[in-house]
Image 1: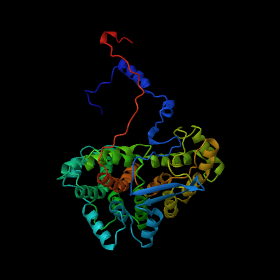
Image 2: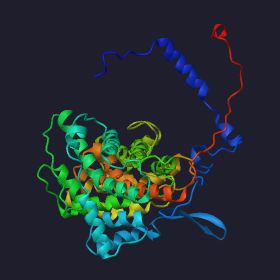
Image 3: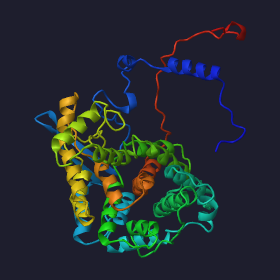
Image 4: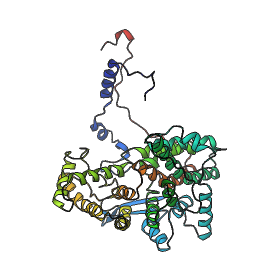
Length: 456
C-alpha cells in the first residue's frame, strides 16, 4: 500500500525525464574509438584483469602450440580442484561445506583437529541476538528475500560490540558469524513473509548445533523438521559448488570495491547481496525453472526431441516463454565446453530425481542440455561454445527438495558468503588504496544559460 502523501510526478516532468534519458545514451562506437573495455570486458568478452587473488581460479582455455583453444572448464579453490574436494569429502562420507569454508578463509585444508574446532565455532555462532527475530525479521516481512536478507545483515551492525573495527581478527569473527547466521536470516525471513503475506502457519524452529548447515536449512524450513540423508547431502554439495567462483564475478568484485573504502563488514555484505539479487547474476536458476515449466506445459510430448528442439528455436526467436531470446542455463561468461560445477552436480541430480520419482523431468533436462548448444550454434553467431551451467540444474534440485522459489537466490548467498568473506579479508590484507576506476567523459562542453534563456 502506498503512503497517502505519495504523489505521482507531473506528466511534464516525466516527459522531460524521458528526454534526459535519451540524451544520456552513448554511441557504442565511442567505446571502440577510446579503447574502453565496456563492463570491464574486452571485445571478446574476456574480463579485464583488475587484481590478483589466491582464493580461487576459473580456467576454460589453454595454449596449444601458441594458439589459445577452449578446454573443459576447471575450478580451483585455493589451488585445489573442485572435483578433488567433492570426491574427497564424499569418499569419507562427510558433509563438505564447513571444510570448504575453512579452506577459503584460511588458505589450506584443515586437519581433523582444525576442522573440528572450526565446525564447533560455526555451529556455536548459529544463533541470532535475543529478540532479533521478533524485532527485526517479523516486523517488516517482504516478498523479496534478498532485500530481507540485506536488511537483516545491516541491522546486525547495531548488535555488534565492535562493528567498525577493521582489524583482521575482528573481521574474521564477523565473517564466521555471518556464515553461520545467513541460513537463519534467510529461512526466518521467508517464514515471516509466508505467514504475514500468504497467510500460512508460522513455525519457527531453533537450529540444531549437531546438524550441518544443509541439514539445518532443511530442518528449519519443514514443520516436522524431517529430511533424508540424500536431501541433505545434495544441498550440501550445492553449497560447496556455489561457495566461490573467482574474484571477477559481479558480487565478489563488489566485495573488493566496497571493502577498499575500509567500511564495515555488514555494509560490504549488504552491497554484495544487492549485486547477487540481480537477475543477471544470482537469479538465473529461477528463470531456468520457469522456462522448463513453460516447456512442459507447451510441448505435447516431452519424449519427442523434435518438439523440444522446436520450442528451443522459438525461445531464441523470441516466440516463446518470456520472449527474451535466451535459453536460460545454457552458456557462461567464462566456460565454453563445460562448467565443472554442472558436470559434478549432474551426477547427483540423476540420483535425486530417481529418489523423487521425477526421472522423466530429468531426461527432459538432459535433452535440453544436449540440444540447446547445437540449436544456439545454428541460430546465432558465436565467439565460443556454450554448455549447461550450474544454474541449469540447481533450480531443478531445489524444486525437488521442496524449497520455495523465493529462497533460490538466498541459498546462493548462504553459500557465497564464504567466498565473499575470503575476498574481503584478502582485500584488507593487500590493498592500501581505494578502488577507483576511471570513466572518460564524452559530454560536450557548453555554457551556463540564465533561467530566462532556457526555453525548449
